[in-house]
Image (cartoon, rainbow, N blue to C red; front, side, top):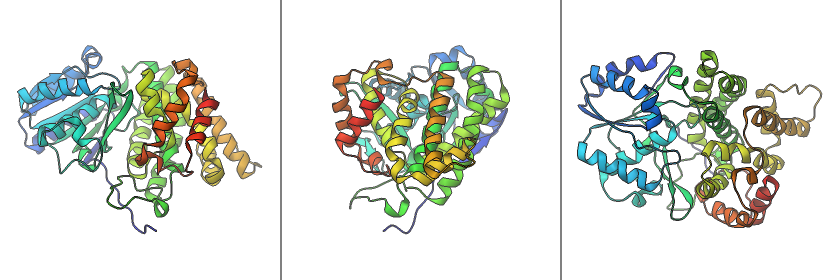
Length: 401
């Protein structure tokens, strides 16, 4: 039985309206000279890249921008970014955008520091040491990549998502400015927001730290459910549930944007130490095959996995109902747990997240292979509180189909 756990996050977090204005002073403290800004064309079009570049320049930094980021980035997109970076030879990386751009920056940092191929680092604990300084500046409220340990890519040859996972990938600095999310479109706001809620709920339902079984010789960045993680989730869930609908419906609502950015940040700190489970494991092959957004896939699957885990996480689900603002007076624990699941369904519908896999292009004859691939993602499955068989996972997908 495990008797200890550890906790990691970004080196420093700067949060609040206008936090990006501090960037010039922050980079002076890092004592770097040449920055690569990893972003995408939508961020450039919105004027956010120019804003960040001006702040970097004001801090005495030479900057070049790679704007080839893409949703659910492919290995080829990573290689394109790496080639661009190798020619520029930066000593600072800045990931600007959603989690995809920050993830690209993380893995490029690994390749610039240690060489090799992306495949050399797939999995946990393959990064040998610290990478060059990285600043994460999110323009969506969802992934928490500005404080997390993973860079997720899409392996288009095998139609599955893969991850480079190491605590060395956590950014040196996270700048979390709600103003940077105001231009985020409603669908991206909804998808990223439900992703943040999935992070929080999966972490709250995760395998207890004392029960987390890691095979000899393997490394687990995820520590299992523990008190600090619970504290973070219990702060994140009410923020997300309260502010997500308003952020989707009125992008210029600064209070909603601030609440969502804080909720997503806290959820990111929590899940990236505690762990996520079957929702994420199932989404990896589904997202790789049908190219839905990661958040949309997670949000669709979330209530179905909550239902599967209910027999072993009744108390946690009952508490989640309270945290989500459900009136639970007079309800039994089981009724509270069901109310939590229903609340997620209601929230999804309110913000336009689909309820069925067929709505995002999944075919029924794919379900078994998705279940088989998900079961093999051990680093995620061991964090799920109820150990599923391939038949269990297939049934979850059939229910969601």
